[in-house]
Length: 149
Image 1 (tube, one colour):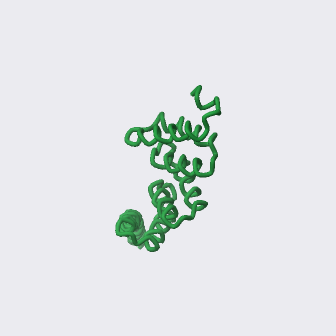
Image 2 (cartoon, rainbow, N blue to C red; image 1 turned 90 degrees about the horizontal axis):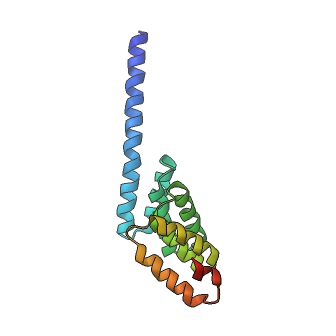
Image 3 (tube, helix red, strand yellow; image 1 turned 120 degrees about the vertical axis):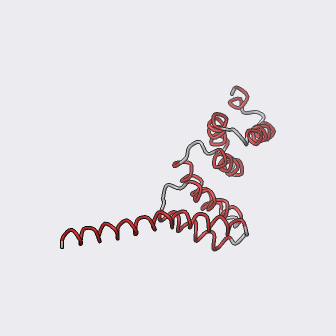
């Protein structure tokens, strides 16, 4: 009797955990489809739901930040970007978005720090960093710390 009970428990747990693993992917994929079709409210809900099951998914935080950018909620956008950066410190898209926010806030020291990190990890978006550096030179020409780096 105990062997049958153990087998039943094993089968139940296997089915339960495999469905939980599959549902994680489904939440992100479904959220991404909603995001791409510009259904931002439902996409936000699904990305948040994905984070509940997979709290270390930097892509979900990135897409949430993009939704908050569209909604002009800079505080939530920045919070999600900071979380994504903690999980994935070499994500160039997250770094770039954070640099743009810091630039809007005139936080030039943060832009400089992020830019140095970005220069080390950039592969696809390197031109964007150069554009930000040029705009900083135009905005803050008297700051000697920028010209030395």
